[in-house]
Image 1 (cartoon, rainbow, N blue to C red):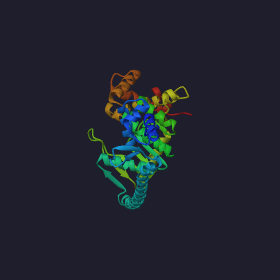
Image 2: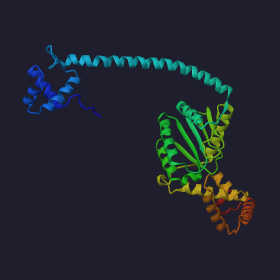
Image 3: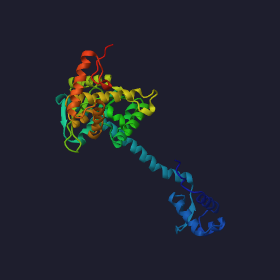
Image 4: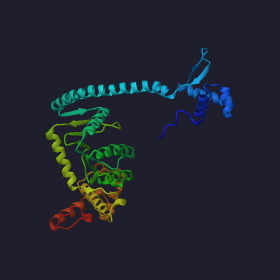
Length: 353
């Protein structure tokens, strides 16, 4: 936006009248311009602030208009000197901090070599380390995000950081669990990230939350204890980081692209496929005799939601108890292995070509 002028039009008219008179007298200028003396006095104060009026005579009470070119030099000179000094200070800051940056990185590389796996208990310290890794990232960020949809606040914060990485040409790949597709906030986030080149897929099970930058440094959070944010292990050992990258690639290859339903160019076949995989996963975990809470945790959904799925599947199987359902699933799975039959929904299937 344009800044307002230093003098308004009336103050310029007052200055013009003073130049014509050769002196500044409030009453005379007010009479010439046909305005009140108080208004002229306000204009005089503005002119004095810009040093456009100076004393006339020995008493110093009468004011006279001064040459604007001389005033300009008086006003601008200290500002230009201040700019020059600030530029010198910027150069000194650059020189000093760049030399310290080289020192920091050399010691940091040695520290990473000596402590290839560091466990940080303080969540704030973990965030600082992640922020530093993000700032230095130049090629790729890979992340595993188990559980269901994330909160809108977290997604909004992550969106700003992700878009900044994408603008720098960093490849972004994120893996969620299938249950994240039910979250409106997550779908909106995925749509925005996808529009700018980010890649998002979902899988039925993800065991750990992991973030990897440039295949060089990985963050593996500690197990959460209560409501407080957990610490994390910072892994820089090349062998361990390479192993984590291979694990990510294996999960990525079998995962389904996450295209929000209202943006899919097809008829939603991707959503149906992930829905079938989720159903099959619940059947498989039920057949293992796992409790509802364990199944919900492994599939990244709320226990109440998991129980609704289980109830619907039991009705479909015609089972009256979890025990009976487990037996029926196990028998159908065994029959499927012998005969190539398919369980309801495809659970425990074998392909016959």
